[in-house]
Image 1 (cartoon, rainbow, N blue to C red):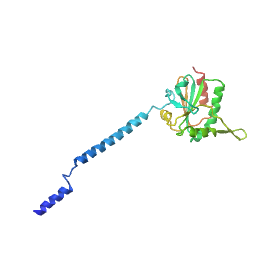
Image 2 (image 1 turned 45 degrees about the vertical axis):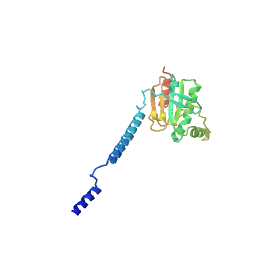
Image 3 (image 1 turned 120 degrees about the vertical axis):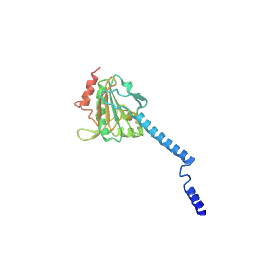
Image 4 (image 1 turned 90 degrees about the vertical axis):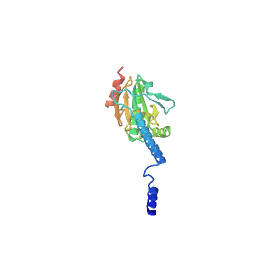
Length: 213
């Protein structure tokens, strides 16, 4: 008789009804709710970031960014002009190589008084702290191989929060968008281009768009 009672007590102590207590059930519900909330938050976060790819034929998404020179500017401020939007960073070697030809194109356009604007949106997190030393160190070699400094005068925009980078779904640097006078993307270029050469398809497209109403 005593052995039977002891066995029952041992079973009861080891496995109280072999189920969860009310506390266990509450903890399980809370854990499940947290998992659902995290999953839902992640889903809506990525949905909010997801946009349609910006390619030739689509309207260029408008944006507003601070300028390195001070103040801010929006893409829509330049409606009626052909816009070359270049997205770059100081860590990009190809961007450094591309800058002198970009400056030459910009100077040629401004000297002729053409309806053209160049916007270079930097994705550098520290903004001017990284950009100013970078553009001060831009050089180009002359015919003798001597390195000469290049003064960068085209507008540089600060995209330190990568708003434009994400809006345009940039995958590599540099990326350039040629936008016509009506705000429509006419070309999307991956990688660097010799913008000083009038024989490149990109430069010829710009010349064509300048002559188009």
